[in-house]
Amino acid sequence: MVDYLARPVVHEAFFKKYASKKFLKASILTRQWAKKSAEHFGVVDVHLSLDQISTREEDNYPEEDEEQDDY
Image (cartoon, rainbow, N blue to C red):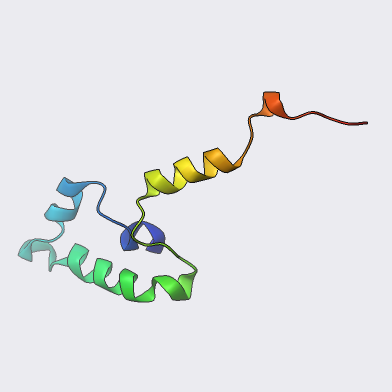
């Protein structure tokens, strides 16, 4: 959850809804806290979106078809 909150906003409508006075500006406060606390929870590169991280991880792992077993 901290990882999601510390990164750039993905769902703008969701963020805006909870940034209103009605919800005590919960999304603003939690994002500020998450950005300050991210390093403590092992979250690095908070400037990257979750999509960018997923793409990086896919590039680092070869496809199953490419793997060869040497027995």
